[in-house]
Length: 278
Length: 278
Image 1 (cartoon, chains in turn cyan, orange):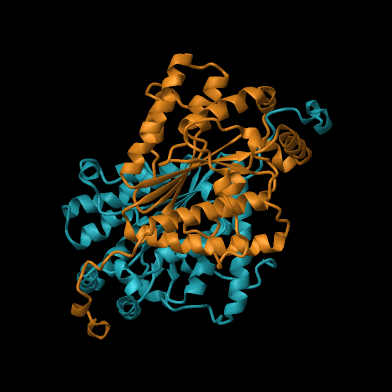
Image 2 (tube, rainbow over the protein chains, first blue to last red):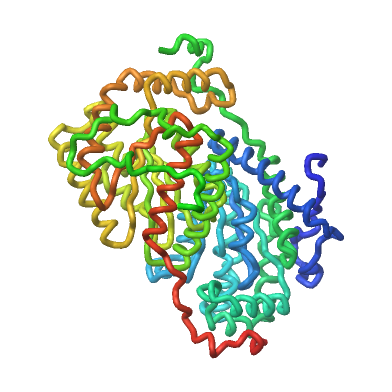
């Protein structure tokens, strides 16, 4: 498209429905041969303006919603992606929710209960920072529920996301793809900076030891739950400027396809000529 | 302060506790003699960066919250203030909630029930776009509940806000002050632009006829509910660049007074020299 000087092809990162996808097929440091960071900055800025204006129309229309599900390994850049891509979008039309370890009240219900409560209302962009996918990722890796139940959860997730889709919520899912070496580099950097210590938890190193188990759990989830209605995208996330471009472009194109429209006025404009107001 | 080239005095807009305040004492088009919009833009930009960094510390600290209550007459600029001041602040640390006409479920409880559910969690900045004050404003003007009950509500509001204050939430309340003539100008402009029709509702004109009743209800609420713990500010809102500066400055200074700190690490950094990570 002419308005975006850097033309990103994100379709190659979409996980095809039906299975057979391998994470190793996508390089976590891919940039599609681009290296012009100035052009990237300008493009991101243009995409953000477009996103901001589409969001206003979505809000005004008040008939559809967009849900972005963000998953990543620790240090994968979820927070930073949200901050970079959503900067300048009216926060009133966005609902960003970070899912943490479930509370006892949440554990007393099925795993979709707490998630369902947080879906974006019509007119809004919702972002899940972690999500119901943790219930087939960390839960699988640590064996927190019986394998037969985890097996059923993929179908429950697909049914749930189809429910959202059928009622006007477009669901897009992004896995921020990094390598184990890249994570090491990021963790080291975190430990070098006292103002980043609050983000570090020694438990992260325990999870890191299970890297391969996590990759297997991700591959399963991506293969089982990438559907035409709610596709998964595996976004190379080591070059942060590239990652931001891909995610921003994906959101803009999704919203453009949703084509939100300003609603017709609730009154007859002919009855209210501006000069008649007192 | 040296870092803010335009030095705004917002203290003169604070409603003193104890009563006797009149809205007419503050000019709705006041700019404190400033007219340099370029300087205003630069100052706002600096304040936003400061706000963004304070918000990160607030989030990291995870012990205090900030609640901004925003009230205004129609066209007073609540949405635009939120968009302008919060631009660039990490949306994940902000909870912005617009209160609409109460639902039957909400009306089945006391007026603070729905509001209490929306208070910001620790580490967050919350913004109420309209609030529990509607229950002593529109409700008073239209006589929706008996006067004796409205009379009691001011005290209930003060007790509720003190509850928040005593548990770590700083409450700041802003009334965006405009004149009846200014509203007329804005409504006319809205009717001239088809892309703004969705914001127009003929009912707004009915409310406009009760302007004086609203001003009386606001004066009562401001006088009864401006407390040392949860002060009201009457911010001149006709010059939008000035309004943004005042609100941004107020938030920055409030957060600076709260002085959020990065928490101590949950581990002994000496146990984790960066180079030891594998």
